[in-house]
Length: 241
Image (cartoon, rainbow, N blue to C red; front, top):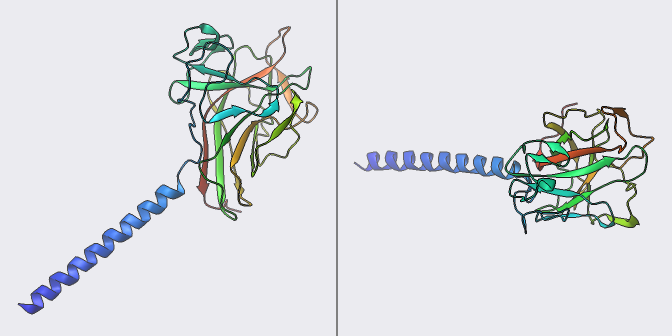
């Protein structure tokens, strides 16, 4: 009788150990895959857009930079900033009911637009992170280009009270020209954190001369304007060498 109870106790302890191991692995995987970007698909907003005011919560235009990033949502009462059809063309969101739009390049000037957010927690030194987001070139764009990038910094990036290129080296950068006006294209990369990075900024951080471009449509108003959706910063394994 006593032997039977001891065996049952041992079996119970083994089951508990197994359940603890499974729960630990689940917790590790969940924390390892957590997206550190708040409002990654721009679904949350302070007000339904009706003009070029930026309403997506958790995101903001770079301070002291005069580029005007656009917020578009299916709830918009006017076609100017509505979805799927708006003044830039027609595109369904990759995720949810909203996206944003940026001028990544003006081939006849140095005009740029940038968007920034605070991460949910700072990056850990020595850990690897994958940064990714989806872009789509708008129907109204005359040029396709590369150098769509992302910068992660310990402090927020500050502009110079102009609309010029921000000179900083991005950890993530698309070397390929993105010309797709129908589908969403992923821009992504993996980098090793120095530690303390908690601000994410998207944009083109290269000069016109450093940026490869090609004409995709003829028009008097020349621009390369991309929509952006589903932004992620996720801890990951070290890249294979």
